[in-house]
Length: 105
Image (cartoon, rainbow, N blue to C red; front, side, top):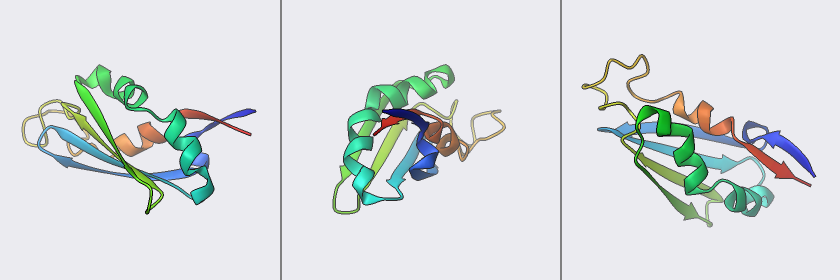
């Protein structure tokens, strides 16, 4: 087994709605869908953003698209208009997500 960064097998995009971050996670190879599903949990994603005040994370599995969507509440330090955060829209959140490690055969 080998531990790698998620960005080696998947890509992500981030969006926002108020103080909520929306993160897609899509494997380059659909064969990695189950592997990612087992290892990239709501708890792991929430832990990535707790330092910014995130309070909850919900994962939506999209098996027909071989993709996942994560909604992270309170991850934007007040939201686009209410935060002094340099990345008010949370666009770099996708890079943070892709920094997670996963174990592959």
